[in-house]
Structure formats: C-alpha cells, structure tokens
Amino acid sequence: MTSDLCSQAARFIEARGLHLDDAQQRMLGRLADWLQARLRPSGWRRRPAAGAYLWGGVGRGKSLVLEALFQAAPCQAKRRVHVHAFLQEVQQRMLRHTGKTDPLQRVADELANEARLLFLDEFHVHDIGDAILLGRLLQPLIERDCILLFSSNYAPSQLCPNPLYHSRFKPFADLLQRRCLVLQMDAGPDYRAGSTQHWGLYLQGPARLLEARLAHLSAMSQLLVQRRTLTLRGMDERTIWLDFSVLCRQPLASSDYLQLCQRFAHIAIGELPALGRCTLDEQQRLINFVDIAYDSGCELWLQGPHSLETLCADVGHGDFSRTRSRLAQLRQAPMESLAC
Image 1 (cartoon, helix red, strand yellow):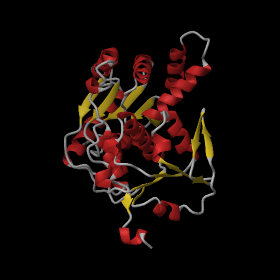
Image 2 (cartoon, one colour):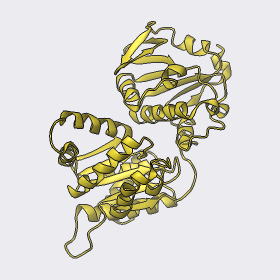
Image 3 (cartoon, helix red, strand yellow):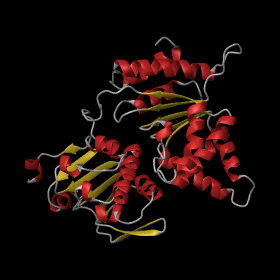
Image 4 (tube, helix red, strand yellow):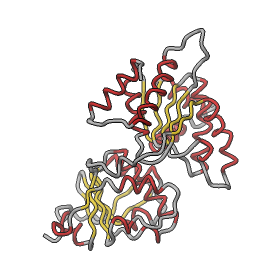
C-alpha cells in the first residue's frame, strides 16, 4: 500500500481505532491504486474501470474500506448513499420530470452534475422494478464519467436472484462486470459479531419489560406514514414504539421505513416472534427495516420472548446473514437488570 490515497485512507481507519487484517489491507491497496488512476488518468495507459464493485461475506469491512477511500478521495463533489435511500431519491426525481422526454436521462444528468464520486453502499436488489430502474441508470451514469463505488454481499451475477426475473436483470449485471473493477473480499471473521460498539438493545422477556422503559411516552393510537396508518404503542418527538405485527405484517415499503428512520432517532419494536416461523415477506420487511435503521444511525430497541439466538434461528431468507450480523451488535441487557 504505497499510494498517497491509500495512506490517507489507512489514517482514516486508524483514527477510528480500527485495524485491517491482511485481506483488507490488500484490498485497500488495490482499490486505492485503481481510484488514484481513475481520478488522475494518464494519457499513455489504458483507461481504468469506470467503477469498483466490492463484494463478500457479512462483517468483512467492505463498507469500511470503501468509506475510507471515499473520505480520502480529493473530490469536492462526492456522495455516499444507501441503496434504499437512493432508490427513493431516484423515484422522487423522476416524478419531478413527469411529462418530459427521457426522465431517467435527466435524473442521470442531475446525479452526475452533483457528484463525480458516488458510493452506493449495501447494493442489492430483490424487487424487479427496483432492479430494472437501477440497471437502466448505470449506463448513463457511466457515460457521464461518474465514478461509482459499490459494496455488496453479492457478486454482480448473483444480484436479483429470483429466477423469474434474473434474465431481465442479467444485461445490467453484465454491465457491472464489464465496466467495473469487481473484487471479492476474502473470507474471514465477521468483525461485527465481536464488536463492542452497540447501536441498540435487545430485551428478552415479556412485553412489560419494554413497557417499563417506555412508560414516559405519550400514548398515541395512530401515525400516518405516506398513505398508510400505523397503530402505535407510544411516541414522543424523538421516539416511536410499535409492535412487530404493525411493522412487518402489513405491506410497508422501504420508503415507509426510511420515513420512520428520518423522523425518529429512537425506534422500539415489541413482540418479536421467532423469525424462522415468519413468512418470507415478513422476513424481507424486517431485513429492509434493519438495513435502513442501521444505516440511518437510529437507536433500535427490540423485545421478544426468545433469546437472540432463537429469534434468528432457521431463517430461510438469503439476505438474513447480514441482518443476523447487525442484530448481534445489539446490547443484550442482563436478565437480572431487566427484573429490577
């Protein structure tokens, strides 16, 4: 790791009190060399790839490595955004261009003008509409010389795994493979699992444990989120408390969860069942919610009768490994303290 960009990125990581393992150091060095060449192309060498796509297992530091490079990159116009928030933004921008020619091209113009470097974190697609929208946006962004960074748990060919839709997304997966530097982070420990940095709390036990901690909240029966009314257990200006059934057993979208996480700094979810017994749709909604809450910096409190291990057991959804890793970062209050 010899480039100036790599050294600056390494200092960013060290300043956070973190240390890279050998695989992460090699990846940082390779990506830094690529990005430095991409930002300062030489006339005599082959033009570097338009973007970089880093994928691999959960908790392996993909976002950390790319965030360090992103912070070190000498670009004034740069953005990091989670894929859920990006999708909502693109859809809102397209609505503003309704009735005009080529609305997606206009959105690509806006995005490329606003950011030379665009980092799409936790890149994954399951809904075919979202998949096609993101796929159609990639080519015009690349044509406008926007430098793209992606972190993902999936190789490009594994995106949009639903066999009913995979063939429709394949041309865009091929575009990623062809125009991006695609790298896989080597397997290794899940650093989230051993982290001492907690982003919330898991309360194992009856609902009264959560009720005791949130008794100060004003009782409020309903909250309007976009076009849907949610039944609440309580809320104040910074905190909302609702049950799992309200959050995941009705057809809420990622945009609904984004609105909740943007409005409230503290979200409490009660009455979580064993997730392995839930439907795939319910599991997907919880996965989406946890992704958005984690990225938004929300403090999350969860309550259920099962241990965290039992809560997460036998979940069949392919994306749940990331969610399990993030739930492992919730502090588990000792049972004796809960009884007080």
